[in-house]
Length: 124
Image (cartoon, rainbow, N blue to C red):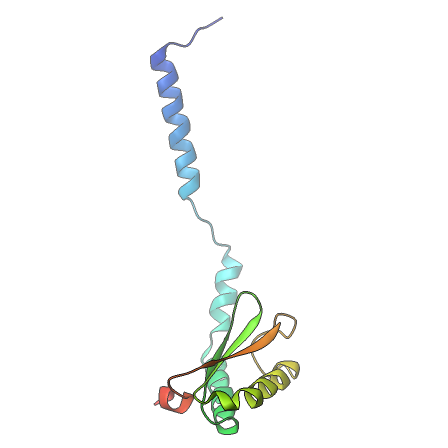
């Protein structure tokens, strides 16, 4: 039976550590994910989103924009929070009609926050 000496043990641990480190640093992104993400951001999709933002700005004075949080909250901004109920109702109807980007099954509610600027000011 072979008995490893100290030098052999250190060399073996070093090689094992290097192998683990190289595995930890390696990141692989599936090609289909890259293609899907690139195709999701087309000029026509950008224009469509901007048109929806402009429509919401016409219908709800002070509308500033929205985004989807990881927890499913659709966070919307408005410069005048007294418009919050109108904005919530409009966004909920647009989500239900599938006019907004988030899948309706992902949206768990609408949260309205105070904005400093409305969408038309930001779009200039």
